[in-house]
Amino acid sequence: MARILGIESTCDETAAAVVADGRTVLSNIVASQAHLHAKYRGVVPEIASRAHIENILPVLRESLEAAKTTLDQIDAISVAHRPGLIGSLLIGVTAAKTLAWSMGKPLIGVDHVHAHLYSIMLAENFPSPSFPAVGLVISGGHTALYEMNSLIDVHLIGSTIDDAVGEAYDKVSAILGLGYPGGPIIDKLAASGDPESIRFPRTLLGRDSLDFSFSGLKTAVLYHVRGVPSKGQQIKQITRTLNQQELANISASFQAACIDVITTKLKRASKRVKAKSILIGGGVSANRGLRQALSRFSTPVFFPPLPYCTDNAAMSAALAHLFYEPKDFSPLSLDAIPQSQFQR
Ligand code: KG4
Ligand code: ZN
Image (cartoon, rainbow, N blue to C red; front, side, top):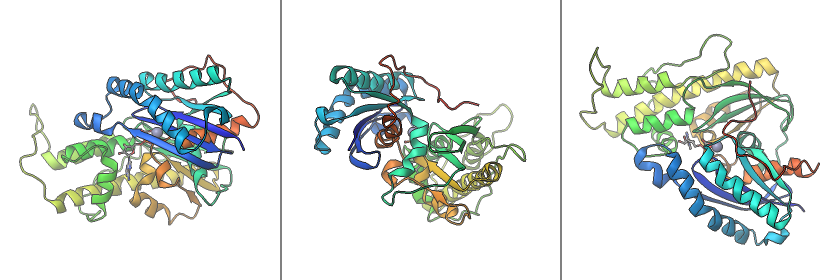
């Protein structure tokens, strides 16, 4: 039973996990830095890389202890070495290379976005999606569609031209004076709001486009809350506090616009690749409204279990197993790379 130790440090979570045979999660430790970035309402790269340095060793130790595994019993070290913030990536990559070299274990570098797509495989019922499939990664840093001919053969077919959808959630939460990260807060508020109370724009970018744009939607929420600025004037600050029902209605209407755009693009992409299934990953895949809307799809839709939606190391340790079996290892010169391996 091969045990892979996974390391994740692409953005603002320091994480380590031990996964056996690509399926069984023996431990999954995530040190969130959300409290450090909350007052800036977004991730500050310098703060993130410093926090990774402080967190990486305790998180690694904890993941081994929780898995009741010693370093000797680990068969390979995997690390998400792309895409992400360079300063953050460097900490995880350096830790992984050091462990691999000093313990004489194979090193397996994986793409973080690929790991998000693979995270559906961590469900307990051992899912077996049919291919070709459409992959969708929706998170704070990524919003992209993929054609998947297998779990390894992945091609980018569309991506956001401005904000990621999770970023739009975080910014709308900031506009409403709510906390960070915004996704879970807006998701919860949306449940008690009327999604038809405000008609926010759905940006589809042309009839056949598989790309996304969320910055117009975010601005529409801003103007709804603070008023449209007239020429030469600054946007007003909120002059009164929004009551709970107003917050819920704005959240529900914003979420409805996001869901409409995502479902429209998924239908287009499914038609284009003749998809037999749809695989979704990334923080926004935890969204309850989206999960409910997609439960009505005729094509089977696979979601990750909730603990594996947001950034974690179990998803990359699981994915690394696919490379472990054929001994497709990375050299110790493995680089941290800001871009994904999937480019158009
Ligand atoms: O995958 P992730 O941890 O990090 C990136 O790779 O970017 O995703 C974090 C994002 C944040 O923008 C957060 O607001 C969003 O996922 N998010 C959600 C929900 N839970 C987290 N968005 C909508 N609904 C949720 N329930
Ligand atoms: Zn992510």
